[in-house]
Length: 290
Image 1: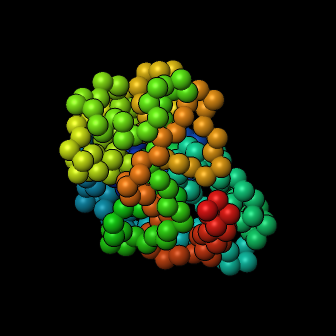
Image 2: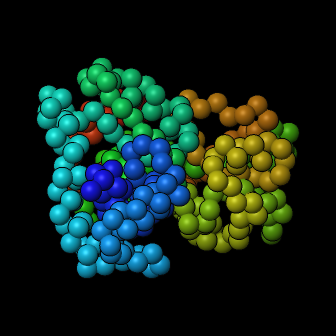
């Protein structure tokens, strides 16, 4: 029996399908290759291991997964023991800004304690990152923390960031209060998807002030929000990120009275020594930024 085929089946069974498995496998492999090799495994065994749509293991698939799961699930732990009791690979999820501007220094400091450390990065929104943690596709997320973590999740606060509005440099608007006094705000609101915490908090506060202003442009990142605001395509909703210099063509308007958003770290289950090291370095950087 081909052990590599068994490994691929392990990831498919563990993550509930071929595409989720492709995202979780810790080396590059494409969906067609996984599908082909799983088909070869089923042909060799003479049985179907799982239904494709909707995904469900067959009785034979359940039996095979139960047999191979202890081996593949404990490979990382065994590698850590052989390397001196410390794992050497961590998967981190965060926004593009955190991954680009803040994580490199945290990684460099952690690597001094864990020589040969391997790092995997995933970009995403808070909701996406929490889902990745739930599916065990990342080990640690730096993200917005809202409310009490779900069962099995743990979090620690790193920073509190204020909401701001971004207007073009030459805009006559000098404060957010000018907008609230209007009967109608004509400028399009540029923001992240409505399901994101930054948008929900903003809309909650607008309702308290009796202001109706809904998104006119939905962007996938704060960088895009800044770029569109700089080009005069609307007013952007963003965060006052420490040490981040806004684009030369925009100004930031404080949102006085709006509660800050909490930025923190989130992980699932047991806190490993590697996670502890990253948390310690992230807390040091957060203190410097604050």
